[in-house]
Length: 298
Length: 331
Image (cartoon, rainbow over all chains, first blue to last red):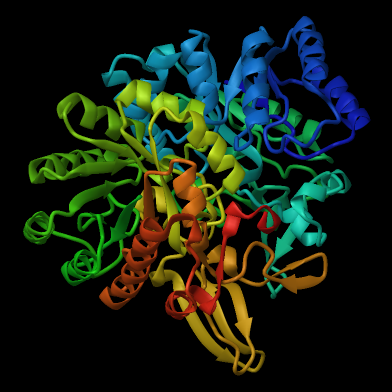
């Protein structure tokens, strides 16, 4: 089982990003995804900066993957995507079918992120034929579906040629919109958002009128309110045939979480203690994995 | 532009045809389509009657098979494609890569349309579906501004259909998991968002409350219009403020954009609402037919009539309509 660090889904200042990846180099993750996957207006780091960072991390022995935008609307976003696919020299995480098409035409291998809809082995096979070498399961799927997809993939003869990754820790990416909900919360038009996402390193909590945590606003992306935590599912994942467990960055305790995941993996699933003392258990959820509503805990 | 109208039942289909639909889209009676609600949709016999009715009136029939099958249910989607092919539907509206693959391989002459659930918002994504499955048309997600629709249309490899009227999804369709985060059902897996089975209403001293799977979605004061608790249209707390943090209860209406949409080369307008009554279908289709005919006749002198807007407002969520993402300020 490998551990991966997902792309930072929030908008952090350049300095914070640099510090974060300084720490990532010496952490136990095997794979690092980086780049902007949510909003094209977030340019604290531009493509050349990400590429430079990618080269450094790669030099330090990490497998690096460049993540791309999940929702592509403007022509400028498509041009940028083409440029990244053309020149990066990195493995790319496709988060929209646009990237899949560009990379398939160039006959370049790619990873599909969780926003690419793969709900069965036939879909997976089609993407495998187009160059997909690792896929991240859509977040709403459960362990039984995953198991059956991998069994079907074996029957279709390509299971051993593709890696499976599961979003295993962090706030779940649940939806993408044309509307920027951060700008809306600030009573600003999207075109004059003043990059207010910079003020929220973990997004903005959205609660019900009974103060129950529901979602997290992150610009045009809506995330879960609770943190999805599948750390203790390591053994099941290993059994099913999952190759990579993904940890999605938060601003506070990512590296502590990585080390705890690593410990669980090293001890073969034995270790089981609470992650990050400042996060209460009731802020975790794991419903999706058990075929329940995502926000529930089983 | 072709007027593509919804039908969740035979009476609704007849209402659509009688009031001027160019095409009607339906779904089968299971979770293979994105409006999988109790009492809705067509079994084999009803689908045949539907086909007879549209054929007799020179109207097209599309079949939506636009949810995402999982391994345990794959055969149902396969059967739905077989049934639609057998019916000789004019087009199948599909989202899943595996289902598209099956339809293309098994029935090469079938017309395939990419469902809005396929979530293709740009020409590269559209090219993927064209190159791999030979799709003839795609329905654009409701996330593009009019200027962006124009850019896509200018170099799209396939014909484009856009939403003209109906309930407004504010998230990119096919990539929204809000419903399954809170309830047991989602659009992608079950063909249902914020399902009625999870809804609970209660009168409390704080007002009338609507809940989904026990999660409070909204609370209404006396006299306030209490709408259906769709997840993205509830009132929530963000930084101490309580408001419609994602979207208000409202419907999409683009009647006024008919000339622009036609100018930029949009081939078809889709009316949302297979879950709605025959009366809704009749009302909406009649207005849109009149509007499209009026535009055809007078071209750039086209103006929307007050009576059309009133009629549409009557059947809209929260009795209000919006241009949604087509209008940049909305975003």
